[in-house]
Image (tube, rainbow, N blue to C red; front, top):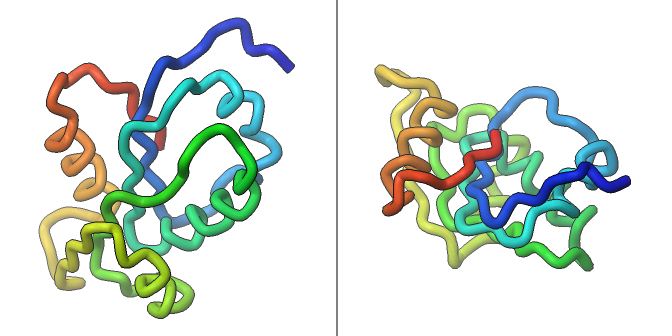
Length: 120
């Protein structure tokens, strides 16, 4: 399916909660030329792992750059060890912002141009 547009580059932010099955969003990812940054917030790492498995032979690299959050809802903390190349930022459970808010703030902080397309 051709969506009729393309996305030159984007930042992906994976968060907790129910995510779309990868096959449902494959047409979107076919329209993306490159991924500049991948951030996973807490149990968003579980979703990221699912997407990485589904898209393993795809033209895009879903490897995480930043893993952040309080990690209170991740399915298995051993997943953190699978991504030794990612920067890890841990926060206490008692904090002023949700893990999703922290991830979005990090995406904006790391976007030097201020114009990157952020996909949540």
